[in-house]
Length: 477
Image (cartoon, rainbow, N blue to C red; front, side, top):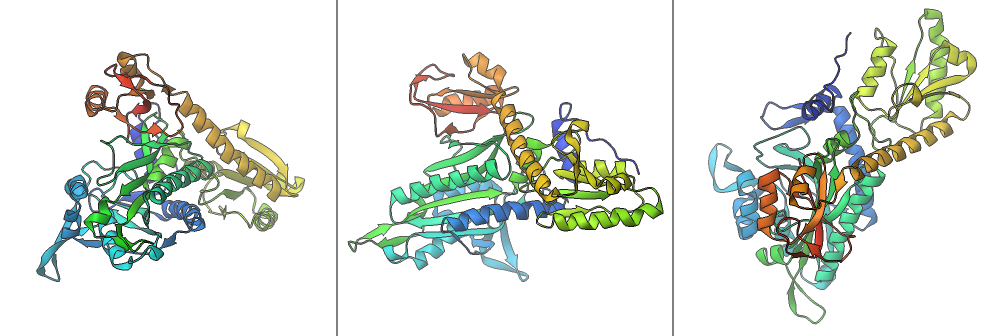
Protein backbone atom coordinates (compact mmCIF):
# COMPACT_ATOMS: atom_id res chain seq x y z
CA UNK A 1 0.00 0.00 0.00
CA UNK A 2 1.57 3.28 -1.12
CA UNK A 3 1.18 6.51 0.83
CA UNK A 4 1.05 9.81 -1.03
CA UNK A 5 3.01 12.72 0.37
CA UNK A 6 1.26 15.84 1.54
CA UNK A 7 1.83 19.08 -0.36
CA UNK A 8 4.65 20.94 1.34
CA UNK A 9 3.71 23.77 3.69
CA UNK A 10 6.10 26.17 1.96
CA UNK A 11 4.64 25.57 -1.51
CA UNK A 12 0.91 25.45 -0.70
CA UNK A 13 0.03 25.88 2.96
CA UNK A 14 -3.70 25.99 2.27
CA UNK A 15 -3.77 22.70 0.37
CA UNK A 16 -1.43 21.13 2.92
CA UNK A 17 -3.98 21.98 5.61
CA UNK A 18 -7.00 20.75 3.65
CA UNK A 19 -5.43 17.42 2.82
CA UNK A 20 -3.99 16.91 6.27
CA UNK A 21 -7.36 17.24 8.00
CA UNK A 22 -8.73 14.51 5.75
CA UNK A 23 -5.73 12.18 5.74
CA UNK A 24 -5.12 12.40 9.49
CA UNK A 25 -8.72 11.23 9.92
CA UNK A 26 -9.84 14.31 11.84
CA UNK A 27 -12.87 15.29 9.79
CA UNK A 28 -14.66 14.93 6.47
CA UNK A 29 -16.95 17.05 4.32
CA UNK A 30 -20.67 16.64 5.07
CA UNK A 31 -23.39 16.38 2.39
CA UNK A 32 -24.53 19.94 3.27
CA UNK A 33 -22.10 22.45 1.78
CA UNK A 34 -19.98 24.13 4.44
CA UNK A 35 -20.68 21.55 7.15
CA UNK A 36 -18.27 18.95 8.49
CA UNK A 37 -18.36 15.50 10.02
CA UNK A 38 -15.91 15.31 12.92
CA UNK A 39 -14.46 11.79 12.84
CA UNK A 40 -13.62 9.80 16.00
CA UNK A 41 -9.94 10.84 16.03
CA UNK A 42 -10.89 14.51 15.65
CA UNK A 43 -13.63 14.18 18.25
CA UNK A 44 -11.21 12.56 20.71
CA UNK A 45 -8.97 15.62 20.32
CA UNK A 46 -11.99 17.88 20.91
CA UNK A 47 -12.96 15.84 24.00
CA UNK A 48 -9.49 16.39 25.45
CA UNK A 49 -9.83 20.13 24.76
CA UNK A 50 -13.26 20.07 26.44
CA UNK A 51 -11.90 18.26 29.49
CA UNK A 52 -8.99 20.67 29.96
CA UNK A 53 -11.27 23.71 29.68
CA UNK A 54 -14.15 22.25 31.68
CA UNK A 55 -11.85 21.56 34.63
CA UNK A 56 -10.69 25.18 34.54
CA UNK A 57 -14.25 26.53 34.30
CA UNK A 58 -15.48 24.47 37.24
CA UNK A 59 -12.44 25.37 39.33
CA UNK A 60 -13.46 29.04 39.00
CA UNK A 61 -17.06 28.41 40.08
CA UNK A 62 -18.81 27.93 36.75
CA UNK A 63 -21.47 25.27 36.16
CA UNK A 64 -22.76 23.71 32.94
CA UNK A 65 -26.29 23.89 31.57
CA UNK A 66 -28.04 23.50 28.21
CA UNK A 67 -30.21 26.00 26.36
CA UNK A 68 -32.37 25.47 23.23
CA UNK A 69 -30.98 25.36 19.70
CA UNK A 70 -34.00 27.30 18.37
CA UNK A 71 -34.55 30.94 19.36
CA UNK A 72 -37.60 33.10 18.51
CA UNK A 73 -36.50 35.60 15.89
CA UNK A 74 -37.98 38.45 17.92
CA UNK A 75 -35.43 37.76 20.69
CA UNK A 76 -32.55 38.68 18.41
CA UNK A 77 -34.32 41.84 17.27
CA UNK A 78 -34.51 43.15 20.84
CA UNK A 79 -30.79 43.91 20.78
CA UNK A 80 -30.28 46.04 17.68
CA UNK A 81 -26.48 45.84 17.37
CA UNK A 82 -26.58 42.10 17.93
CA UNK A 83 -29.10 41.35 15.19
CA UNK A 84 -27.34 43.66 12.73
CA UNK A 85 -24.04 41.92 13.45
CA UNK A 86 -25.47 38.45 12.85
CA UNK A 87 -28.18 39.13 10.23
CA UNK A 88 -26.20 37.86 7.20
CA UNK A 89 -25.27 34.63 9.01
CA UNK A 90 -28.67 33.56 10.35
CA UNK A 91 -30.37 30.29 9.45
CA UNK A 92 -34.13 30.74 9.91
CA UNK A 93 -36.78 28.04 10.40
CA UNK A 94 -40.15 29.09 8.94
CA UNK A 95 -42.01 25.74 8.89
CA UNK A 96 -42.43 22.97 11.44
CA UNK A 97 -44.62 19.87 11.37
CA UNK A 98 -45.69 20.71 7.84
CA UNK A 99 -47.18 24.11 8.68
CA UNK A 100 -45.86 27.67 8.64
CA UNK A 101 -44.80 28.89 12.07
CA UNK A 102 -46.51 31.92 13.61
CA UNK A 103 -43.06 33.31 14.38
CA UNK A 104 -39.87 32.27 12.57
CA UNK A 105 -37.21 30.58 14.69
CA UNK A 106 -33.48 31.21 14.36
CA UNK A 107 -30.98 28.37 14.68
CA UNK A 108 -28.71 29.86 17.33
CA UNK A 109 -25.60 31.65 16.05
CA UNK A 110 -24.80 32.30 19.76
CA UNK A 111 -27.02 32.24 22.83
CA UNK A 112 -26.91 35.67 24.50
CA UNK A 113 -30.57 36.34 23.66
CA UNK A 114 -32.16 33.11 24.88
CA UNK A 115 -29.93 33.03 27.97
CA UNK A 116 -30.66 36.70 28.70
CA UNK A 117 -34.37 35.91 28.55
CA UNK A 118 -33.98 33.06 31.04
CA UNK A 119 -31.70 35.05 33.36
CA UNK A 120 -34.34 37.81 33.50
CA UNK A 121 -36.78 35.16 34.74
CA UNK A 122 -34.38 33.69 37.31
CA UNK A 123 -32.84 36.86 38.77
CA UNK A 124 -34.83 38.80 41.37
CA UNK A 125 -32.32 39.94 43.99
CA UNK A 126 -28.60 40.60 44.44
CA UNK A 127 -28.63 37.28 46.34
CA UNK A 128 -29.21 35.50 43.00
CA UNK A 129 -25.95 36.90 41.61
CA UNK A 130 -23.53 36.15 40.16
CA UNK A 131 -24.81 33.55 37.71
CA UNK A 132 -21.87 31.70 36.16
CA UNK A 133 -23.12 29.28 33.49
CA UNK A 134 -21.35 27.61 30.58
CA UNK A 135 -22.82 25.40 27.89
CA UNK A 136 -21.21 22.96 25.47
CA UNK A 137 -23.04 22.69 22.17
CA UNK A 138 -23.23 23.60 18.52
CA UNK A 139 -24.18 26.77 16.66
CA UNK A 140 -24.94 27.66 13.05
CA UNK A 141 -23.62 30.66 11.12
CA UNK A 142 -24.25 30.78 7.39
CA UNK A 143 -20.69 31.38 6.25
CA UNK A 144 -19.98 31.84 2.55
CA UNK A 145 -16.33 30.72 2.54
CA UNK A 146 -15.78 27.62 4.60
CA UNK A 147 -12.84 25.43 5.60
CA UNK A 148 -12.83 22.38 7.87
CA UNK A 149 -12.56 23.40 11.55
CA UNK A 150 -11.56 27.00 10.75
CA UNK A 151 -14.89 28.20 9.41
CA UNK A 152 -17.93 25.96 8.96
CA UNK A 153 -21.68 26.58 8.87
CA UNK A 154 -22.15 24.47 11.98
CA UNK A 155 -19.44 24.18 14.60
CA UNK A 156 -19.01 22.97 18.16
CA UNK A 157 -17.97 25.16 21.04
CA UNK A 158 -18.50 26.24 24.59
CA UNK A 159 -20.12 29.54 25.41
CA UNK A 160 -20.03 31.00 28.89
CA UNK A 161 -22.63 33.55 30.00
CA UNK A 162 -22.45 35.33 33.33
CA UNK A 163 -24.51 38.00 35.13
CA UNK A 164 -23.16 40.23 37.90
CA UNK A 165 -24.26 42.89 40.38
CA UNK A 166 -21.54 45.41 39.44
CA UNK A 167 -19.59 46.53 36.40
CA UNK A 168 -16.34 45.76 38.21
CA UNK A 169 -17.34 42.13 38.81
CA UNK A 170 -18.27 41.69 35.14
CA UNK A 171 -15.01 43.29 33.99
CA UNK A 172 -13.03 41.01 36.32
CA UNK A 173 -14.89 37.99 34.93
CA UNK A 174 -14.09 39.05 31.35
CA UNK A 175 -10.39 39.34 32.22
CA UNK A 176 -10.40 36.07 34.20
CA UNK A 177 -11.82 34.07 31.30
CA UNK A 178 -9.40 35.62 28.81
CA UNK A 179 -6.56 34.55 31.12
CA UNK A 180 -8.14 31.08 31.40
CA UNK A 181 -8.07 30.69 27.60
CA UNK A 182 -4.47 31.89 27.42
CA UNK A 183 -3.44 29.45 30.16
CA UNK A 184 -5.17 26.58 28.34
CA UNK A 185 -3.67 27.46 24.94
CA UNK A 186 -0.12 27.84 26.25
CA UNK A 187 0.01 25.00 28.79
CA UNK A 188 -2.23 22.36 27.18
CA UNK A 189 -1.88 23.06 23.45
CA UNK A 190 1.62 24.63 23.41
CA UNK A 191 0.15 27.45 21.31
CA UNK A 192 1.80 30.76 22.40
CA UNK A 193 -1.16 33.11 22.15
CA UNK A 194 -1.20 36.86 22.68
CA UNK A 195 -4.16 38.13 24.75
CA UNK A 196 -5.47 41.60 24.04
CA UNK A 197 -8.35 43.96 23.33
CA UNK A 198 -10.03 44.09 19.93
CA UNK A 199 -10.69 47.29 18.03
CA UNK A 200 -14.22 48.71 17.88
CA UNK A 201 -14.55 47.40 14.31
CA UNK A 202 -13.62 43.87 15.40
CA UNK A 203 -15.84 43.98 18.50
CA UNK A 204 -18.56 41.36 19.07
CA UNK A 205 -21.99 42.67 18.09
CA UNK A 206 -23.61 44.19 21.18
CA UNK A 207 -20.48 44.15 23.37
CA UNK A 208 -18.85 47.14 25.04
CA UNK A 209 -15.42 45.51 24.86
CA UNK A 210 -14.15 42.35 23.17
CA UNK A 211 -10.90 40.62 24.12
CA UNK A 212 -9.25 37.74 22.29
CA UNK A 213 -6.28 35.44 22.25
CA UNK A 214 -4.46 35.65 18.92
CA UNK A 215 -2.19 32.88 17.61
CA UNK A 216 0.30 32.87 14.74
CA UNK A 217 -0.06 29.96 12.35
CA UNK A 218 2.78 28.23 10.46
CA UNK A 219 2.29 30.52 7.44
CA UNK A 220 2.51 33.57 9.76
CA UNK A 221 -1.20 34.40 9.41
CA UNK A 222 -3.18 35.16 12.56
CA UNK A 223 -6.00 33.08 13.99
CA UNK A 224 -8.42 34.47 16.57
CA UNK A 225 -8.52 31.47 18.89
CA UNK A 226 -11.02 32.46 21.61
CA UNK A 227 -12.90 35.58 22.72
CA UNK A 228 -14.15 37.10 25.97
CA UNK A 229 -16.76 39.89 25.84
CA UNK A 230 -17.69 42.52 28.38
CA UNK A 231 -21.32 43.24 27.50
CA UNK A 232 -21.97 45.99 30.06
CA UNK A 233 -25.73 46.40 30.51
CA UNK A 234 -26.61 46.20 26.80
CA UNK A 235 -28.21 42.77 26.90
CA UNK A 236 -29.57 43.28 30.43
CA UNK A 237 -31.54 46.31 29.24
CA UNK A 238 -32.70 44.57 26.06
CA UNK A 239 -34.00 41.57 28.05
CA UNK A 240 -35.09 43.35 31.23
CA UNK A 241 -32.49 41.58 33.38
CA UNK A 242 -32.97 43.43 36.69
CA UNK A 243 -32.33 42.80 40.38
CA UNK A 244 -33.02 44.48 43.71
CA UNK A 245 -29.71 45.61 45.19
CA UNK A 246 -28.81 45.72 48.90
CA UNK A 247 -30.52 49.13 49.19
CA UNK A 248 -33.71 47.71 47.67
CA UNK A 249 -33.09 49.68 44.46
CA UNK A 250 -33.88 48.08 41.08
CA UNK A 251 -30.72 47.76 38.95
CA UNK A 252 -29.80 46.22 35.59
CA UNK A 253 -27.30 43.35 35.66
CA UNK A 254 -23.84 43.54 34.13
CA UNK A 255 -23.07 40.60 31.84
CA UNK A 256 -20.28 38.79 30.00
CA UNK A 257 -19.98 36.06 27.40
CA UNK A 258 -16.96 34.08 26.21
CA UNK A 259 -16.25 31.15 23.89
CA UNK A 260 -13.76 28.77 22.28
CA UNK A 261 -14.71 26.47 19.41
CA UNK A 262 -13.53 23.57 17.26
CA UNK A 263 -11.65 26.27 15.30
CA UNK A 264 -8.97 25.75 17.96
CA UNK A 265 -8.26 22.33 16.42
CA UNK A 266 -7.24 24.26 13.31
CA UNK A 267 -4.93 26.35 15.49
CA UNK A 268 -3.18 23.22 16.79
CA UNK A 269 -2.81 21.79 13.27
CA UNK A 270 -1.38 24.96 11.74
CA UNK A 271 0.86 25.88 14.68
CA UNK A 272 2.66 22.54 15.06
CA UNK A 273 2.12 20.53 11.86
CA UNK A 274 4.93 19.78 9.41
CA UNK A 275 5.29 18.29 5.93
CA UNK A 276 4.83 14.75 7.34
CA UNK A 277 1.51 15.60 8.98
CA UNK A 278 0.13 16.48 12.39
CA UNK A 279 2.30 17.13 15.41
CA UNK A 280 0.09 16.97 18.50
CA UNK A 281 0.92 18.26 21.98
CA UNK A 282 1.01 15.26 24.37
CA UNK A 283 -1.45 16.74 26.86
CA UNK A 284 -4.22 16.88 24.23
CA UNK A 285 -3.22 14.08 21.82
CA UNK A 286 -5.91 11.35 21.56
CA UNK A 287 -3.06 8.80 21.53
CA UNK A 288 0.02 9.85 23.49
CA UNK A 289 2.17 6.88 22.48
CA UNK A 290 1.74 4.07 19.94
CA UNK A 291 3.43 0.70 20.46
CA UNK A 292 4.56 -1.07 17.28
CA UNK A 293 5.43 -4.78 17.49
CA UNK A 294 7.96 -5.58 14.72
CA UNK A 295 8.88 -9.12 13.64
CA UNK A 296 9.50 -11.06 10.42
CA UNK A 297 9.34 -14.71 11.50
CA UNK A 298 6.31 -16.34 13.06
CA UNK A 299 8.38 -17.72 15.95
CA UNK A 300 9.27 -14.12 16.89
CA UNK A 301 5.63 -13.13 17.32
CA UNK A 302 5.00 -14.56 20.80
CA UNK A 303 8.03 -13.09 22.64
CA UNK A 304 7.49 -9.71 20.94
CA UNK A 305 3.80 -9.57 21.91
CA UNK A 306 4.57 -10.68 25.45
CA UNK A 307 6.92 -7.69 25.73
CA UNK A 308 4.26 -5.44 24.17
CA UNK A 309 1.68 -6.49 26.77
CA UNK A 310 4.16 -5.94 29.58
CA UNK A 311 5.02 -2.45 28.33
CA UNK A 312 1.37 -1.58 27.76
CA UNK A 313 0.71 -2.33 31.45
CA UNK A 314 3.71 -0.22 32.46
CA UNK A 315 2.20 2.72 30.55
CA UNK A 316 -1.42 2.17 31.62
CA UNK A 317 -1.67 5.76 32.92
CA UNK A 318 -1.23 7.10 29.38
CA UNK A 319 -3.46 7.05 26.29
CA UNK A 320 -1.79 4.11 24.53
CA UNK A 321 -2.49 2.32 21.25
CA UNK A 322 -0.95 -0.99 20.14
CA UNK A 323 -0.73 -1.16 16.34
CA UNK A 324 -1.11 -4.88 15.65
CA UNK A 325 -2.56 -4.45 12.15
CA UNK A 326 -1.50 -7.27 9.88
CA UNK A 327 -0.41 -7.02 6.25
CA UNK A 328 1.20 -3.58 6.66
CA UNK A 329 4.93 -2.89 6.70
CA UNK A 330 6.58 -1.12 9.64
CA UNK A 331 7.43 1.75 7.28
CA UNK A 332 3.78 2.21 6.36
CA UNK A 333 2.82 2.27 10.04
CA UNK A 334 5.58 4.76 10.88
CA UNK A 335 4.29 7.15 8.21
CA UNK A 336 0.67 6.59 9.25
CA UNK A 337 1.30 7.53 12.88
CA UNK A 338 3.46 10.46 11.83
CA UNK A 339 0.53 11.70 9.74
CA UNK A 340 -1.72 11.45 12.80
CA UNK A 341 0.76 13.34 14.96
CA UNK A 342 1.14 10.80 17.79
CA UNK A 343 3.82 12.31 20.07
CA UNK A 344 5.81 9.13 20.74
CA UNK A 345 6.35 5.87 18.85
CA UNK A 346 7.56 2.82 20.80
CA UNK A 347 9.05 0.07 18.62
CA UNK A 348 9.67 -3.45 19.92
CA UNK A 349 11.40 -6.12 17.84
CA UNK A 350 13.21 -9.43 18.56
CA UNK A 351 16.50 -7.64 19.35
CA UNK A 352 14.70 -5.36 21.79
CA UNK A 353 13.25 -8.42 23.51
CA UNK A 354 16.74 -9.88 23.84
CA UNK A 355 18.25 -6.62 25.08
CA UNK A 356 15.30 -5.77 27.35
CA UNK A 357 15.05 -2.44 25.49
CA UNK A 358 12.71 -0.46 23.25
CA UNK A 359 13.23 2.12 20.50
CA UNK A 360 11.55 5.48 21.13
CA UNK A 361 10.87 7.88 18.25
CA UNK A 362 9.77 11.45 18.99
CA UNK A 363 7.31 13.06 16.58
CA UNK A 364 8.59 16.58 17.25
CA UNK A 365 12.17 15.70 16.18
CA UNK A 366 12.09 13.93 12.80
CA UNK A 367 14.56 11.25 11.72
CA UNK A 368 17.45 9.74 13.65
CA UNK A 369 17.88 12.74 15.95
CA UNK A 370 14.52 11.98 17.55
CA UNK A 371 15.18 8.27 18.08
CA UNK A 372 16.78 6.57 21.08
CA UNK A 373 17.04 3.10 22.63
CA UNK A 374 16.18 2.77 26.30
CA UNK A 375 15.74 0.00 28.83
CA UNK A 376 12.32 -1.49 29.52
CA UNK A 377 13.04 -1.04 33.23
CA UNK A 378 11.26 2.05 34.60
CA UNK A 379 10.13 2.82 31.07
CA UNK A 380 7.10 4.70 32.40
CA UNK A 381 9.38 7.30 34.02
CA UNK A 382 11.40 7.77 30.83
CA UNK A 383 8.28 8.07 28.67
CA UNK A 384 6.67 10.59 31.04
CA UNK A 385 9.81 12.71 30.93
CA UNK A 386 10.00 12.59 27.12
CA UNK A 387 6.34 13.56 26.75
CA UNK A 388 6.97 16.57 29.02
CA UNK A 389 9.98 17.51 26.88
CA UNK A 390 7.90 17.25 23.69
CA UNK A 391 5.18 19.47 25.19
CA UNK A 392 7.79 22.06 26.19
CA UNK A 393 9.67 21.82 22.89
CA UNK A 394 6.53 22.45 20.84
CA UNK A 395 5.80 25.61 22.83
CA UNK A 396 9.38 26.79 22.50
CA UNK A 397 9.50 26.21 18.73
CA UNK A 398 6.14 27.91 18.17
CA UNK A 399 7.16 30.87 20.35
CA UNK A 400 10.46 31.29 18.50
CA UNK A 401 8.65 31.15 15.15
CA UNK A 402 6.09 33.73 16.29
CA UNK A 403 8.64 36.13 17.76
CA UNK A 404 10.85 35.91 14.66
CA UNK A 405 7.87 36.96 12.49
CA UNK A 406 6.75 40.01 14.49
CA UNK A 407 8.29 43.34 13.49
CA UNK A 408 7.89 47.00 14.44
CA UNK A 409 7.53 49.00 11.22
CA UNK A 410 9.43 52.25 10.75
CA UNK A 411 6.67 53.72 8.58
CA UNK A 412 3.57 52.77 6.60
CA UNK A 413 5.51 51.43 3.61
CA UNK A 414 7.43 49.21 6.01
CA UNK A 415 4.15 47.91 7.49
CA UNK A 416 2.91 46.96 4.02
CA UNK A 417 6.02 44.84 3.44
CA UNK A 418 5.93 43.22 6.89
CA UNK A 419 2.35 41.92 6.68
CA UNK A 420 3.17 39.98 3.51
CA UNK A 421 4.95 37.44 5.73
CA UNK A 422 4.53 38.41 9.36
CA UNK A 423 2.82 40.62 11.93
CA UNK A 424 3.38 44.33 12.31
CA UNK A 425 3.29 45.71 15.85
CA UNK A 426 2.74 49.43 15.62
CA UNK A 427 1.16 52.52 17.15
CA UNK A 428 -2.39 53.16 15.96
CA UNK A 429 -4.47 56.27 16.59
CA UNK A 430 -7.67 54.23 17.01
CA UNK A 431 -9.48 55.61 13.96
CA UNK A 432 -11.60 53.35 11.77
CA UNK A 433 -10.29 55.21 8.73
CA UNK A 434 -6.68 54.17 9.36
CA UNK A 435 -7.80 50.62 10.17
CA UNK A 436 -9.76 50.45 6.92
CA UNK A 437 -6.88 51.86 4.89
CA UNK A 438 -4.55 49.09 6.11
CA UNK A 439 -7.17 46.48 5.27
CA UNK A 440 -7.77 47.85 1.78
CA UNK A 441 -4.06 48.29 1.01
CA UNK A 442 -2.74 45.04 2.46
CA UNK A 443 -5.65 42.67 3.39
CA UNK A 444 -4.28 42.81 6.95
CA UNK A 445 -6.61 43.55 9.86
CA UNK A 446 -6.10 44.70 13.42
CA UNK A 447 -5.71 41.66 15.68
CA UNK A 448 -5.50 42.95 19.27
CA UNK A 449 -3.97 45.55 21.54
CA UNK A 450 -1.91 43.51 24.04
CA UNK A 451 -2.72 44.01 27.70
CA UNK A 452 0.88 44.30 28.86
CA UNK A 453 2.17 47.10 26.62
CA UNK A 454 3.82 50.23 28.00
CA UNK A 455 2.04 53.57 28.16
CA UNK A 456 4.58 55.73 26.30
CA UNK A 457 2.86 57.63 23.45
CA UNK A 458 3.92 57.46 19.81
CA UNK A 459 2.77 58.26 16.28
CA UNK A 460 0.14 56.30 14.34
CA UNK A 461 1.90 54.21 11.70
CA UNK A 462 -0.80 55.11 9.14
CA UNK A 463 -1.61 58.80 9.59
CA UNK A 464 1.19 60.04 11.89
CA UNK A 465 -1.19 61.44 14.54
CA UNK A 466 -0.59 61.02 18.27
CA UNK A 467 -1.27 57.48 19.49
CA UNK A 468 -1.20 55.95 22.95
CA UNK A 469 -1.49 52.23 22.16
CA UNK A 470 0.15 49.68 19.92
CA UNK A 471 -1.77 47.02 18.01
CA UNK A 472 -0.92 43.99 15.90
CA UNK A 473 -1.72 44.13 12.17
CA UNK A 474 -1.76 40.81 10.30
CA UNK A 475 -3.48 38.86 7.61
CA UNK A 476 -5.79 36.39 9.27
CA UNK A 477 -7.98 33.32 8.86
